[in-house]
Image (cartoon, rainbow, N blue to C red; front, side, top):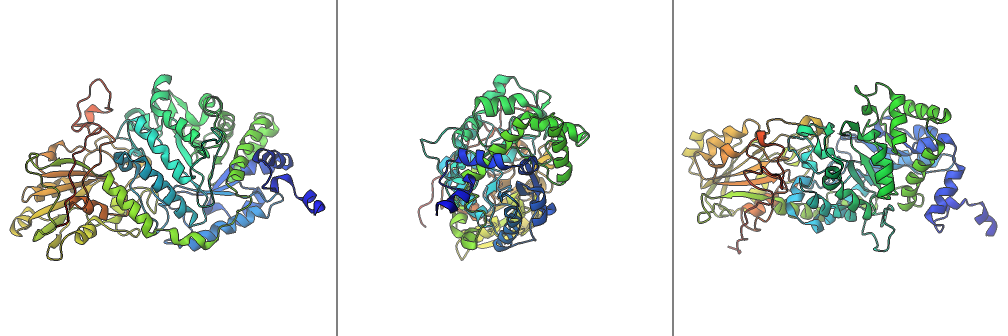
Amino acid sequence: MAAANAERPKYRDPDQPIGARVLDLLDRMTLEEKIGQMTQIDRSVASPEVMNRYFIGSLLSGGGSVPAPKASPEAWIDMVNGFQNGSLSTRLGIPMIYGIDAVHGHNNVYRATIFPHNVGLGATRDPELVRRIGAATALEVRATGIQYAFAPCIAVCRDPRWGRCYESYSEDPAVVKTMTEIINGLQGEIPSNSMKGVPFLASQKHVAACAKHYVGDGGTTEGINENNTVASRHNLLSIHMPAYFDSIIRGVSTVMISYSSWNGVKMHANRDLITGFLKGTQRFRGFVISDWQGIDRITSPPHLNYTYSILTGINAGIDMIMVPYNYTEFIDGLTELVKANFIPMSRIDDAVKRILRVKFTMGLFEHPLADYSLTKQLGSQEHRDIAREAVRKSLVLLKNGESADEPLLPLSKTAPKILVAGTHADNIGYQCGGWTITWQGGSGATTEGTTILEGIKKAVSKETAVVFNENPSSDYVRSNNFSHAVVVVGEFPYAETLGDSLNLTIPSPGPSIIADVCGSVKCVVVLISGRPLVIEPYVSQVDALVAAWLPGSEGQGVADVLFGDYGFTGKLSRTWFRSVDQLPMNVGDKHYDPLFPFGFGLTTEPVKAR
């Protein structure tokens, strides 16, 4: 027995301390194997042969990068395990880690539970709910054999013109800070005696998390995506940095760097903030990952001088590069830079130690392959119930009747005839928003869920007629004797730069639907959007107004509150401006003149069973 033990390398022994395993494995690795660990590629260019030949350390699915449309969890597991077997067949058998954007549930996967986007979760002010969402998301990600989620986004969106504003919990760093509780859901509860800054994973039912995008992604001029955040060091640290301190204390495994710049310096090139502040001052011990082609974008235009990009990004302190396609160009370029002494071996070893530390912490060497035991977790009723609860708590009531004495909400479940109108009333894709099934999101029945219309039909009495007409004329509305109308309109799905908007108006035909319906019958408007929009012109036309954000797959949650099974409790996590000329305008600013202030939200009481 002693002889058998002597043959087993220390890094293979789970009883050894992680530090000893890391050093033992690092000592055995060639430069080629080390650089492979630092390389992350998309599944579309991967194969077991590629994993084996280039010692690839990590794979990802970009938005919409799936094994097949509507693939089952078993198909995902078989794909991930196939790639993993390629990694396990290498000389040292170092398992790869597979990452995916699970930013509001496991949102690339058909039939997964889609939770409200972060802007809505911020309005709940409920960190414990967000922790449960993290735990549910982790189970659904593991249900497909994946071990790593590129979440949470802890951006502090300071300007709603930014196309990623819905990925931010709030304009207020204090709210964003509290929502880092999601990390305790994704990775599991970290023991109180745990060393601060060291990555943590509780079990094989949890996933490695990623705090992103470091740092200042939500502070760019005019909210232009990937642009420049002009801020003093004090402002950067007091507005955009606080949630990183909390994430690191919670044992977050990885931190993703932002495409944006700080005072003209690209974050992917910022050695002072990555190596100096994140790894030094904050003592972060997990690994730092680039964004998608993040180092390419150090130059303008991107990829102009890839050698310079590799040199600058790696020397800044980025440990793993999300290449994601031209991996041989990256591997060859980095190899040459190390051999020519432009990048010191100590920098490579720091990167690989951090990547291995996360992999050992996750138990990846003991559990490299997934089985089918968690497949039932995908889209489970229990998780859908959590999502429905999150929808209820995220709704913000902005107006309810012309005066407090004459509220329209909650609506009666026994009204004879209700009109439901609007582009977003019966559209799962629209109510989920971007980052759903595909990167930009879609229209129609893109995944399984309950539309707001379906939710309304289930909420009312059997005797109540629910009539749906997406875009009715005012004559139609007047001549049909409706008790009242629910109008559901808003933004069409978008992600990242394609969501940048300088006008923030309700897209057509939303305004004309509001005018035609609300000019003819008592109406509540439910606004589906990733951010506050220009609504001042419509507030006087409507009887009640609800900000529903991007609620996700469980539209029943909207009906639960409209019809009084639950009360409205949500509070604005963002300032609701009057006009875009006021932007940026955030709570605490000197010239603060909002339509609805940060923290605003009318309440209603639940109706006792009728």
